[in-house]
Picture 1 (tube, helix red, strand yellow):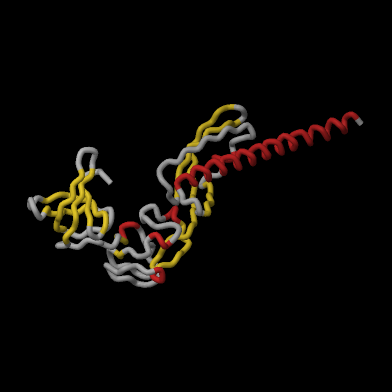
Picture 2: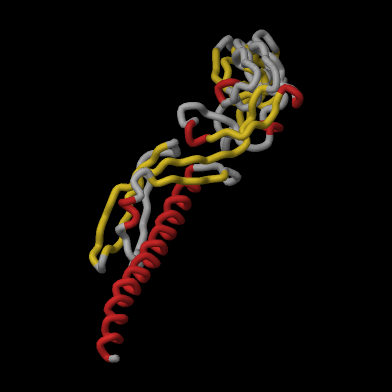
Amino acid sequence: MKKITAIIIGVLLPAACFAMNAAGQKSAKNLIMTAVINEIKKEAPKNAAISVEFEKPQLINVFDGAVSITAGTRGSLSGEMRFYISGYVDGKKMDSYIPVLVRAVCPVIVASRTLEARTMIRGTDLSMADKDIATMSFMPFFAGDADKITGMLTSKALQKARVIGPSDVQPVPVISRGDLVTITCNDENMHMEVQGRAEGQGAVGETIEVRNTASKKLVMATVVSQSMVRVGEGK
């Protein structure tokens, strides 16, 4: 009877040890997965649905239950990223670079129809489309509310379904070349208002050349409204 018991224990013990290691490795893999996703979230829009796939899962499976994970991205968000993982294997510290395939899907603004250059954008000209932005690191885009670019001008012709980025739009000019404007200057020591003539066009916030009609001097001024520009940092 004692012999039989010994045989049973001998058979069961390796299986129990294997189960403990497998559980520890599963826990380590979950921790690594969480750490990697948290790092990716720092680079992605908040509403992005993120999923990852380890290119070499064997590099993950070696970690056991005694795991302390730190992860650092190698470069900005892209479809393939490398992470520096620090953990433990059989109580010994081990560091490894882990290649990860990344998907980060979120709605981005696209053209709902073909738009000519210098077209004022209406709400009906835009729609949202789910895109994997991890593969769009070379293509700037707008994520979120399409209202942010409604009323702006297209800076180039845009094909239907094209993802729209910052370089594709520009604000509507409120001052045109030749317009008479008021040049203001406000600082701690001086307040001045003189008449000027715009030498170029500009939207609110942009800087344009303005000629002082009295002195004939050119100054660089920030567009404040359709009739006023500001020189200097004053408000």
